[in-house]
Figure: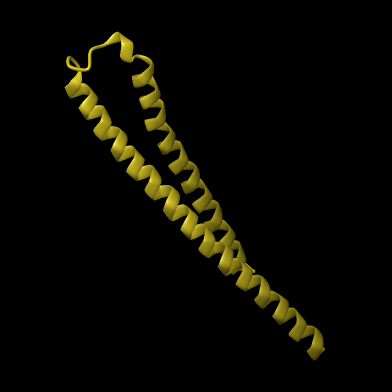
Length: 101
């Protein structure tokens, strides 16, 4: 029973990691939206160095967010497989105990 609780706790941790990754992925999208919405008010030639730094930051955030989302999904799949195996094992143990008594 304690092992199942541990699996469930890990699953909650991976869901929090997934939530964080999705949150990090939304930051670059909002920054790009602001850049596109305000593009009429500045000349790209004048602010090219600032935009280059911003684009590099956006790419880094996309990589970090994508990594968190992908690893969280793969770990959640593993947790689900392990939990299913524990449920099957619990059922087998209960059947064994019922048949021996």
